[in-house]
Image (cartoon, rainbow, N blue to C red; front, side, top):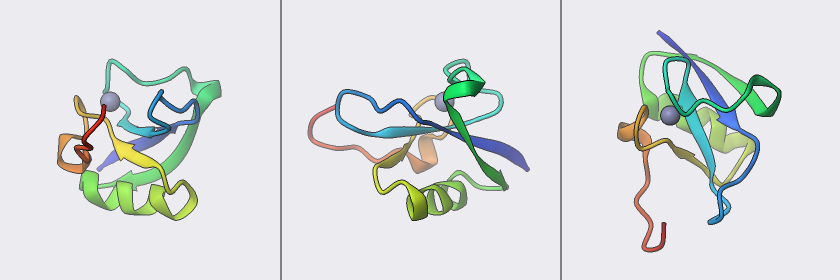
Amino acid sequence: MKRYYLDLIPKTNQDHELHNEFCLYMPVIINAQYIGDFSEDKKALEEALKSYPNANGCKYCCSAAHIHYEVE
Ligand SMILES: [Zn+2]
């Protein structure tokens, strides 16, 4: 199980990135919403999407939950 956090500061494409606790790109904690502990990236993303429709997995730590859009 890993702990997952959502970056509350959207990227330029409006995505809120989902990270796990080991990611180098984790936002500072004041800008991070704790989502929960999950065994799979996709389950964490599903949970994040309930509150943040623009959630998207970080391509470095949550590549299984990273959605590739036309424009990055
Ligand atoms: Zn990450």
